[in-house]
Structure formats: C-alpha cells, structure tokens
Image (cartoon, rainbow, N blue to C red; front, side, top):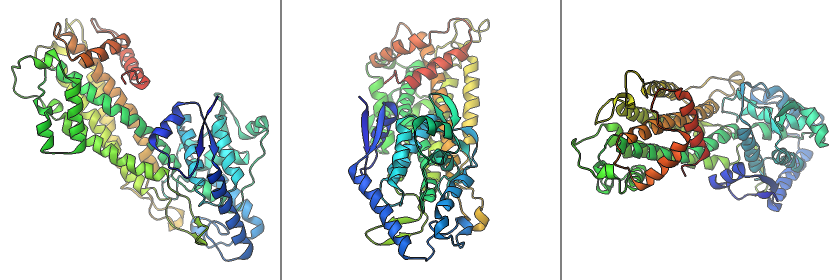
Length: 497
C-alpha cells in the first residue's frame, strides 16, 4: 500500500522531504489545503467580476508590459501565452529527482491559499508527481529574480498539452501522455500562469537535494579525516574538549567530538609519537570542518524557510481583502546562501586533498605513493592529481553568482539574483566533494595497511572491513578509475551510516 503525504499548511521539513523522495510516497491535498485553495480562487473571481481596475499580472501584461491592460475575455489566453513564451530554457536536462521536488514544492506553496489558482490545477500537479510523469526541464535560463521563470514554464507546459515528459524512462510529447492518462488539458484562468511561473522552486529543489546529501557527507568527511589521522600517525590533542570550549563555535565542537569518538581505543593513536605537531590539514580539522557545518546549518535554515513560503506574485490576502504586488519571488536570500554553501563545501574538498598529499609523501614510515614497490608501481600517485584537478574546479565554481546582476525586461527587472546558477553549481560541487572524499578514503585505507599489526579504533576497523569489500588493497598498479567509482558508489549507497 502506498504511503501518502498530505500536503497541508503544515511546514515541510528535511526529514519529510527525504522520506518522500527516498520512499514510494504519493501526495494528496488535505481538506484544509483544498479549502484554502478554493477560497483564494473564489475571492479572485469575485474581485475580477466587480472591478476593472488594473491588477498586475491578472489583467495586465508582465514585466515591462505591466501597463498594458488586458480585456476579460483574453485573461485565459494571457496566462497560456505566459507559460508558452517563457519556456525558453536550454542546456542539460534537470535530473528527474529534482523535477519531482519542484512539483512537490510548487504544490505545497500553492496549497497555502495565497496564489488564486484552481483546485484542479494543483491536483493535476499532484497527479503528475504520483504517476512519475517527469516534465523535461532545462538547467539554463533562470535569473532567479521573478522566480525561476524558464524552468517553471517547462515544468508546467504539460498542463497545457505542450512540451515533453519522461514516463517510465521514455520521452514523449505531453499530448501523447495526456491521451494515455485520459486527462484533459488545464484551461488556465486569471493569474494562474503567473502563479505557476513565479516562485523559487527550481532553486529550492536543487538546494534541498544538495543539503540532504551534504548532511551525510559532513559526517563522512569527519570519518575520512579520522582515518587519515591514524593513517598519518596523527596526534589527538588538537581535538580535546578543552581546546574547543575556549573557542566555542558549534560546528568546531561537534567535529572534535566526532573525531574523538571515532578514534576511541585506537592502538595507532595511543602509541607514543616521535613528532609534536601535525600539518594544519590534520590539526585544524575541527576549525575547517566545523566552519562548514555552521555554514550548512545556516543555509538549511534559509532554504527551509523558502520552501515553506509563498513566492509567487501578486499575493492574495482573502481576509484582508487585498491583492498585493511585491517581490517575494526574488531569489537573493537563496543566491547568497547557496554561494556561501558552495564555498563551504569546496573547503571540505580542499583540506581533504591536502591530507591525501601528505599521505603519499613518504613521511612517517609510510612508503612513497603508498605502494610497497614504488618505481615499478606508481601506486596512488595519480589519484592525488585527480583530487587536485577537482579542487581546482571547485575553486572556479566558488566564484559567487550572486554578486552579478544583468538588467532584464527592458529595465523593469533591473536587479536579479542569479540564484538559479548558484543552485545548479552547488549540485556540481556536492558531486565533486563525493569524489574527493572517495579518493581520501582510498588513500587513508591504503596507508592503514602499512600500520599493521597496529589497528585503528574498533569503529573505524568495522568501517574499513565494509569499505574493503568495495575497494581492495592496491598491491600492484591497476586501473584506479574503477576504484574511485566504486568508492563513490559506496558513499552514495549510505553503507557507512
């Protein structure tokens, strides 16, 4: 039996979002949501019946055409034309999981009863989600200002029988999909096209997915760091509770606590050291990993607020008898935050690569490039090259998009956030961070083989036993691409949790 999530005024959480995308969930509108949607639509219809004054986006043109009055008989065509004309995205197709999140987030936002849409429009969005009908959406085209106009237009073309969808892995015209489903096209009424296209669901869907992955990667980055500490015969003193308490950043405290727990009862760690300090990439793990944790925590708060907000325009306030045109669709809160998160995650990869470089350097009793017969074998020389290349790419991606703005709509939209580009960039950095952690895990686990018969902690030994089933010890040179891919698959599978 399918598990149902009822869309209601109750806020979404990351736990709920992850459950929905990971499980075979179906969506349904709660009675409260249905009432709010219907009341908002009824109010708008009554308002339009008794007045001819221009209301932006309802009986006017859009953007710099806001002063063009539209007759009542053309209001439906106005909304259809809006969706059609704005569907000019290009580039790579958006991942189906992201598209489904866009459908979920838009249905949730419309259910708050501030958008004036028809109940059947929201129900059709939900039906598309429930039947795994994935509109073809393109990555490039949104300025993240008047909402994610181009990608949301592509998302909702199928309501009109336009555009393309993916069903069971097969691409087909939306008209063919509607015929197979026995669905009629939706005739958009006043404001509906604007309600669908205004909004930040493209940005928030990418952000939510990146955050869900980042929550897990933060823990795994600590684990990789702990493995590297013992692999490098590192010192535990920098992770003491006393040091963290005199500089009590929350992420720093959490990171040091994690490392201490992971290295508890390690034979390697407990042996007497010949050195008195470690390089910063080991010693400053609490400060660097912790700063990223604090950044991710801040960004998650911003994104969660956005997911549970009304971000189309104009906004309808039934009880106050007001229709207000404002700027809640502007993506600046997301753009700044997502750029911040890109930089924060890039730094996790940056410090990880530095630990890898130390492990292959031939120091502290480890063989050069972590292979028993260097020279004949290059060992793990080249994965560090790969890591350095990925770190360089992440540094390029860390240049913020949010500091740029290009005037659009003939000057009416004269400041834009570029947050959509920040969001898609974030997804790439998360992918790259997975690869960097994979390379560190390979190097640290390889180095620990040369510490035998001494063992790391029972916790990490248990982890290594599972990891070694996927990525065996490198005795002689082999195609290491396959090792990296297996390690990335291991990370994505969640086997370490």
